[in-house]
Structures are given as C-alpha cells and as structure tokens.
Image (cartoon, rainbow, N blue to C red; front, side, top):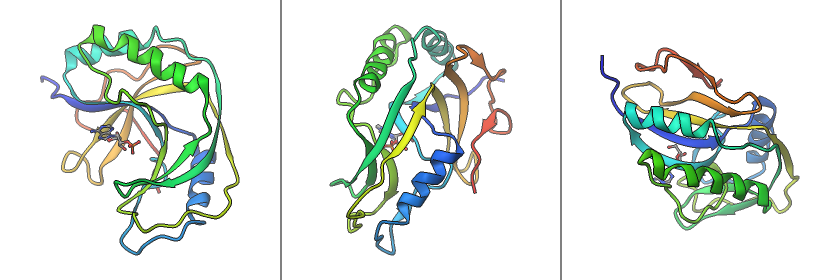
Length: 196
Ligand code: 2AM
C-alpha cells in the first residue's frame, strides 16, 4: 500500500518530568474559560514545521537528519507570553546552541526538497490557544530542560486518529539513526506519546 503524505514537524519533546513541570507552570496562569490548553504529553518546541510530506521526501529527510550534529543543550523555560494570535507560550531563555541546531537542520532541508517553515525562529512551548485574555504568573520559576535529541514527529489528525496525537517517527541525537521501523502508516504502530 502506498503511504499517503504525513503531516510532519521537527521538534524537541521533553520527557514526562519536564512535561509535568510545564503542566504545573500552567496552573499558575489565569485562563479564560474558553482557552484551549495543550494536552499533557504534547508540550514541545517546534523547530521546523514541514506540513504534508510524501514517502520519498520523508526517506530523504530522515537520511539527512541522521547527519545533523546534536550537542546537548541546557534550556531554561522562563518567559511566559501571550501572543497576538491568542496563543499562550512559555519561551526558553536565549540559547545560541538552540539557534545553531535550528540552523543546522535548516541547512539540510533544501536537499530533501523541503523548505524550512519559519525563517525567523521564535522558540516556544505552546501552552494554550484561544488564550488572548490569559494572564501569566507574576513570577516564573525557570524550568531546566536538558535536551539530548531532536525528533521527527507525525502529527496524526482527526479522523485518522481520535483524539489527534503526535507520533515520534524517529529520534536524532545521542544514539543517531535509532529508527522506529517500519514507519507506521495507519497510526496503529510506532511510538505514541504518553497522554493523560
Ligand atoms: P507550535 O505550537 O509550536 O507553534 C504541530 O502541528 C505543531 O507544528 C503545532 O503545534 C505548531 O507548533 C506547529 N505548526 C502547525 N502549523 C504550522 C505552520 N503552518 N507553520 C509553522 N508551525 C506550525
């Protein structure tokens, strides 16, 4: 069966302890009743959103990403903001290594036929959408997040998945090329993120 294009993004997804700290941080905000919080387990930083990617380009992409050097990063999530598009976010302190990782990935994308999504990288963890009236906490205890890898993620949307979920296609980092193979085609295989 031919694999249909998959909606992919490249990002950083923290493990459960950091997911929990972000969730705790969210409880310190004042939220409007109609805000749509991000679900626990899905907190992430998007590096490059790729949109729908066919099987051929996906294979090229995965091969190219295996060659990207990954140095461990110590991020500090500490800047809560509400953006004009009504998204509430928690941003990391400026980190040259994070920008450098973003840049290194951007360099390999054109050879795969894919274009980097955001020429201006504004790293953030989305906390909630429809949150224009949200009020961030007066003080934020920084969340320290050690990053050892980046991941290629398939965003499986409704009705393919109910509820929609993120599935890690491949991890790139301390153990390069540790693929989950064969790639899941129907949302029933592969690694699923632990959602509550
Ligand atoms: P964000 O919340 O970090 O902004 C998976 O769909 C993720 O990709 C979303 O959570 C969003 O990440 C990002 N994303 C979705 N559509 C996008 C687009 N058109 N351009 C850039 N990023 C997008």
